[in-house]
Amino acid sequence: MPPYPSGVAFPLADTGRISYDGKILRTIQQAGGDLYFSTDKGVLYCLDSSTPRIKWTYAAGSPFGCPPVVAEESIFIWDQENSLYCIDRKGTLLWKKTLKQKILSPISWDQDKVYIGTQEGTFLAINKSSGEGLWQLKAGAAIEAGAIFWGKTIIVGCTDGRLYFLTQKQDLGDIVDIGSAIRITPLVEGDRLYLGTEDSVFQCFDLKSKKRIWKIKAAGKILLPPRTDDKRVYFFASNSVLYCLNKRGGDILWWWIAPSRSVYDLEFSADKLLATSFSPLLFCLDRKTGKEIGRYNAKSEIRSNALWDDPNVIINLHNYADDKGTSVYLSQDLKVKLTPSLRSPQPAGTEISFLASPVGFYLPKYEFFIRSETEKVVVQKGSDKNSWTWYPEKEGNFAVGVKVSDEKRTMEAELPFMIIKKQK
Image (cartoon, rainbow, N blue to C red):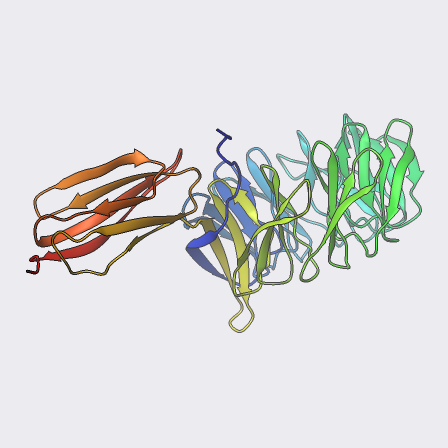
């Protein structure tokens, strides 16, 4: 018997919603059973990942400018007034640091420091516990990409087209000219770095030799950080195309065209990929082939990544008319329909067949039963057979039911049925 399917399963059903003011800032993320996101109204939200419930909120004095970054015990976020906040996992402000320069980059962190880049080209290291400024590097242009880490080395991509290699004590090592502005945070995997540049080139870079391994020219600018699995690397471009490349040589394995542009992180779920764009549609693709496995129409524009937190997929919507956002919890849509061959009522002695039609079950078993006013009797034990035939002997009010079960799920359906006196 093949193993029980893992990851998200379609069709999906809306199982709960949470409304809030404003728009989510692009990303919702999960950590320790909680969900976190920020809004353009300056509110940080912590939700329960299993049920649609707000656990706490933190309101800043200014709209936030980035999604939150969750560390082991703290959450870091900056606002449009260039203040960096450190908030504990219970929603209490630990410290706040205001800069004179305009913050642009995502927040990065390691064991004891957080790092940010500014429009003026300054890269800052800040004490994670106290908010104290530790050191800074002056680059040749604005720093829009987040810092990444390779062993004990910090790598900073800059819009001057260079990669800066630093130690955690500020010592500047190599400076590598890539040739075009770096605006999107690269990805480090082992000794390889994957990055997209302003000239629509996506490339793989060897960090030991500081040399390019391969590159391809995309048909649009790379809009978000890439994702990888064992053999493939994935990225979205501004022409609404999702590319899947072979990691070893950069060959295009497949591409998929989204309904519109996407600035939302890709999400993996087992062997599947979840993708959203500026549209109401959530797509699920096979990571190996790029073929569509399922889709969900939210009927309103999706404004975030799709987050997989088993058994739920969480997305965020936005209604422009009232400037309200909504977090939507989606789970597999389970249904069982029981259909009789004849309608109620029927006379005693009539042959009546019942057919069970389930949705969302994997290799289900079917147990049929009859419920009367006094008892419930199993008339067909659990088996692969999804139908049962009844020859009622006496009149009365009954309920014919079926229990459908697979390895993980169980659901029952009942159908009231009246048996009348046998006609002569």
